[in-house]
Amino acid sequence: MKNIAIIMGGYSSEYKISLTSGNVVYETLDKLKYKAYRIHIFKTKWVYVNDKNEEFSVDKNDFSITINGFKTTFHCVFNAIHGSPGEDGVMQAYFDLLNIPHTSCDMYQASLTFNKRDCLSVLKPYGIKTAKSFHINLGDTINEETIIKQVGLPCFVKANKAGSSFGVSKVHKQADLQNAINVAFKEDDEIIVESFLDGLEVSVGVITYNGEIKVLPITEIVSENDFFDYEAKYLGKSQEITPARLTKTQEDLVIKAAKKIYTVLKIKGYSRSEFIFKDGKPHFLEINTIPGLTRASILPQQAAAAGISLANLFESAIEASLNIANPIN
Image (cartoon, rainbow, N blue to C red; front, side):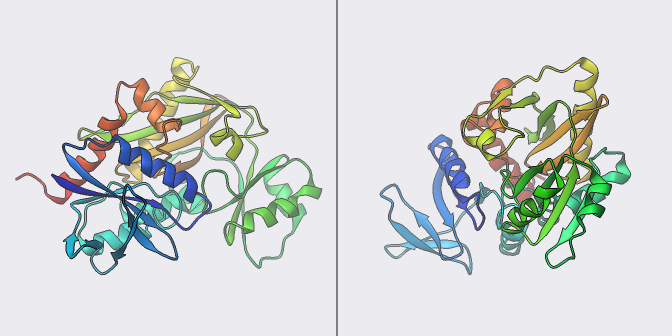
């Protein structure tokens, strides 16, 4: 039986969502195949939490736990941390140094995709369409006229390295721009301001499943709020329609774009890319390499529509990582 560490929590505002994702994985994994351990990763502590909610410290030297004098190491790590340090390459680098297989993409890919503006810059030469953007670092002089001239109004102000729409504001008039910038700087010291794309929004899951790259059924996002914000994502203020109501042409274009992004960036494991259609063409917003895995999350919905159970979805990621670490000759 394989020992599987499910890491969850993290250092960002997304930690509660991550705990929910991690617990779903823990509850779903086949207990006849895997011995699963919930590992909470926080700035103040790394601990194994058992079913009695007792905590046992993790030895960071080799990522092991010792209970009653018995030491446990892990065959594989299931990464369910949204945001830092699970989605930005930090944990990936750590596990690579320890030679412990993990279910997420590699360190470089995690770091690149977590940085929205760097990721967009890498993809543009490959013909991936994006919104117009303006970049701000903490400490830069803010020239509102220059920003608005570049991206127009309304526009989106986003924390460059954050997820779940934390640090994101839609700005309709110049008077609200500075406050939106302040909100974004609470999440990150880098900001990206993007032009508003008025069109159909879709989310496309691309995964490696049974050794092959698979594009899952597409989800259409219809937010009750002004945009697909935290409330829309997690508090039921949106419709998530799977499969999306797309024409065959739209579907083909966005599938091609999502698969191209996955392959060009050399992603492994799960991914979920967001697009908005403008002038009939999908414009890429961002990619998540540790997407939500709660029962209400988009990727599990898409997997279900493809006939893939949660258990099979999670098991496939574990087995793929084990096969990469121990390829069959």
